[in-house]
Image (cartoon, rainbow, N blue to C red; front, top):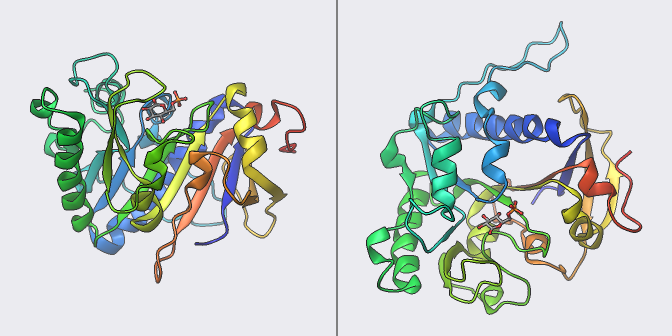
Length: 292
Ligand SMILES: O=C1O[C@H](COP(=O)(O)O)[C@@H](O)[C@H](O)[C@H]1O
């Protein structure tokens, strides 16, 4: 894995521009290389950060005399899977897919032209059977999507909760020890609803090329404070997106929370791990590292 890095958006409002810019770069590179882009998306606050995703493909941050490579969104080449889903129908207010549909896959959403059969949700007809049945079926879906992009997921964009959970992987839960399943069921989630399915750490860490962990607000401060051993301003890499700064980070070992256990590392593959947070999250809480 390349050295983990962190982008700090100076305000919550500027966080989406940083996140969307990176997604635009990763998707453009994937489509150029393999003709397809596979991405996993979390629910929670994340979909709201992606509402202006399409603008990121056309905004130029280059100096006047510097040419920037043109990027195209090419949604017809995208395949979207869910980083986790609550075991409810997609019409339910708690469904992660419902939120993504409402904000991104709708008529005015930034991913409105994504073909519906390339948005891969859970099989709702299995909900009455069991969360395990839903998870097993979704694992087959995830495998078929990964096959489209050479056996690996191009990008996972995951949120993290104020307790340090990511996807539906919660602190101290047995699922953190999962070694073989790509998708697992959880029926005792401490955050409602209790029944969910989730991508596992083996998928994030051994089958995903790039991971972005993203969150904003003071409730996330303690998680950041305890997850990073050190933080240093990265002056080697020019960083152009306005109202933000780039840092090199060193993670605590052992990782104190599920979100800090995410570390994509595939032999022979160039992996990246980028945390994108706002300054409020970075500066909240006792002895938080200063982003400036
Ligand atoms: O329950 C969930 O929570 C996490 C974090 O949500 P946030 O609202 O604090 O950003 C989310 O990433 C996950 O997909 C969701 O199911």
